[in-house]
Length: 153
Image (cartoon, rainbow, N blue to C red; front, side, top):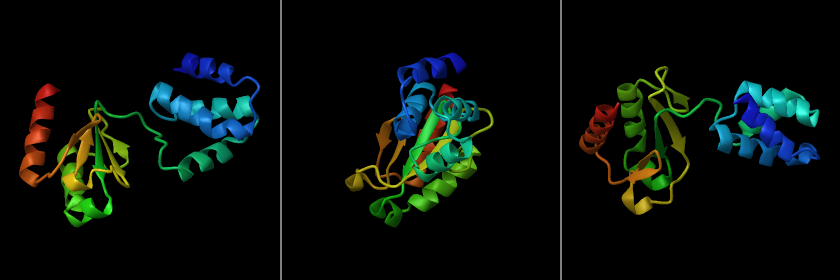
């Protein structure tokens, strides 16, 4: 991972702190999340305190600070999904997968992310698993989906 970050930072060899967001976005794209090591390396590269980098990164909800699980669940929490039971689905996923929203399970199998809107209101409530959308969810259909995923582990 360290080498990937070094290679990426070389592309920004003449950069200033004004390029901080694109650098962080590229790191996350490359390694999947912003590790503490990556933030320290960026700070040294740009001569910017790591506290400033971390503060900026936590301001934007696009950044992750843990690797995604093998199965990454994204739950839409837009207005339509919220009204049709997204909160209950989040609670169910947290209990069933044993992972809190915004985190990755200790075994690395699951991660759970709540997103503001997926733009699929006609399918609400909707989730995505590794980028594949599942809509009009009920507890039964969600339970069935989880069973299918667990069979793949």
